[in-house]
Each structure stands twice: as structure tokens, then as C-alpha cells.
Image (cartoon, rainbow, N blue to C red; front, side, top):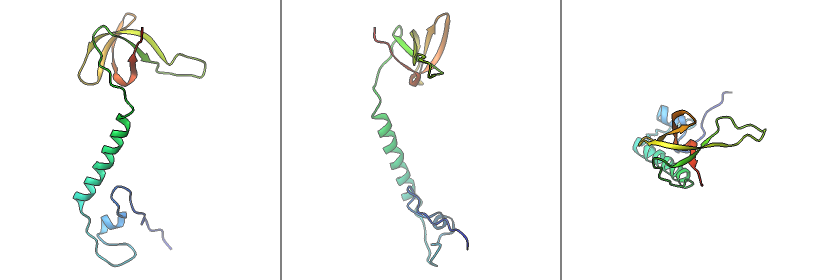
Length: 119
């Protein structure tokens, strides 16, 4: 006896054998997958996931001179601070990054690793 991978995929709504061989595995019936419908279903799931993730975000516009907190790279169980700072923004870029000065070092940081500092 052999195992048949006949579980219907959530996105495509077809079994893998239907997509590869063009027929139902257990029955000898032809099956032709509509690639356009599969692509639309996949895009709909991607959009739903993006909306769910982006719905939790708070929008904030950073400006040069704003104070920010930088997420610590290593968070330990020994009461290490989650964020360090405040840092001052020296440059705002349009690719989702900012340049900020920490001590004597100026470096580029992603927006997901910083948060505004409330003075």
C-alpha cells in the first residue's frame, strides 16, 4: 500500500495530483486547473494577511532632529532594557530607514527597530 498525497491545498483548493497530472487521483476523470483563479485566490490571501498585519501598526512620520529609541539587539532575562537611547535622527530616507546618531556613531536603522521617544 502506498500513501497518496490527496489533501486539498487551502490556497489552490485542489490536490497536488490534480494540478500536476491533470486528473483526480482516485478516479479516472480529467481535471484542468484554471491558473487565473488560483492566482486570484492566492493574491486574496496575501492581501488579507497584509491588511491584518498593517492594521496593528501606528503610523508615525519621523523628522530630522526627532528623538527615538532603538530596539536592543539582544534581550535577555536579566532585566536588560528593551530599547536604548534616546538617539537623534540625522537623516530620513524613503526606503524605510533613518540615520541616527548614538554616541559618536551615526548608523542606519530600519523603522521596525525604532520607536518615537516621548520626552
